[in-house]
Length: 122
Image 1: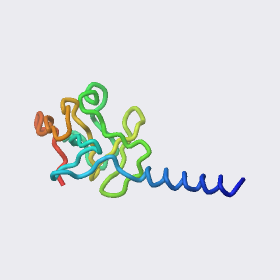
Image 2: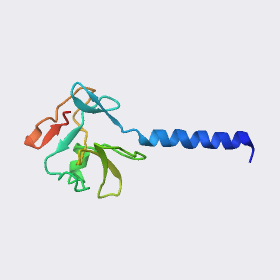
Image 3: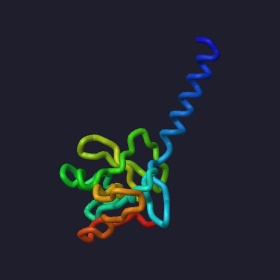
Image 4: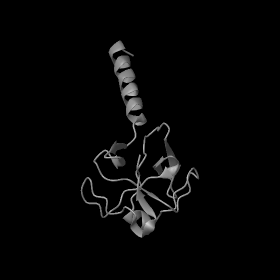
């Protein structure tokens, strides 16, 4: 293998590793939001540190999980495995969701909905 190919391979490996370690959420205005600025929520029926989400099927259509594909989070973030086998991001052990009725960055239409959905305050 040529040295230039080896260096390119190492660069790609380092780049993909660095990318895989970032989480797809950030703090804004005292809450967690996605990288696109969409509000992130937790569900009271999820048990912290259980490694599971209780919002599946029709629930997940209204409350899409925050995907954790290719993410290697560090505390306070972690991963849960969904019923379909996909990875979902969790914060302090609680799975994270978006709300389908939030249409633009900054919307918080799901906060305190049915007294079980809450924005993630930090």
